[in-house]
Image (cartoon, rainbow, N blue to C red):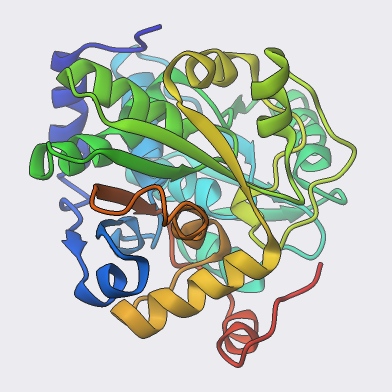
Length: 324
């Protein structure tokens, strides 16, 4: 399933790069020494919002503008990075944005969304309950609902994969964290458009395994909970459109524990002096799981974001694993 063409992806890159300069991808020597193979890190923690999703919001909002359908307001449910993307893009196009977050959401991500001009509404015990509130606001205010997964969001996010694969065409494998699926679907589509053979490996939290369960079952299988401190992985209701692309294009999906995610955050800091949020460190955690079978290969990992609250980061650095 091809969501867009190479020309369309190039157009998206030209648009995104007006706001988001290409982010670096570095092969860090200390990671290579620790893991035993070349590790190229795609630094999506270096965008204007500190996460990869900013790319998708820009392309999505521009597509509404091109279609003559810019609304007076947009609303979405988010744990933070998607919300920052929507808030930044909405402000750029003169549109009001409402971001619905669950109770107990990251204080710092909430503050970042508000600083970008978004109206933050707290509702629901988790992301999926927040989606219900966002739908209610859509009906009440007549706002446009921005989904968590859409072809234009994926096309925007795929500009990061285009940058990575253009700079490193020889990657044997790429590990990608999975929340609602835009990141891995972007990587799969970009790889296929470019005609590369890079193996794409998805990563979920063991405490939020819905996408992995669904991948194995061949159909969406929701879970009752998704309680992980890696909030960008906290999906319990996978989307069929994303699953169809993942099923066709991903080699496998790995599950990483909370302890493994915390250890990967620490390794990122000691080996690269970069901050990674839980979801941002998940790909590295999965590579560490498979370090023996990946020896001697060139491996890419997506550091999808660095938006981790300071108290959480502090606990991780002293060797703790945050609890939710």
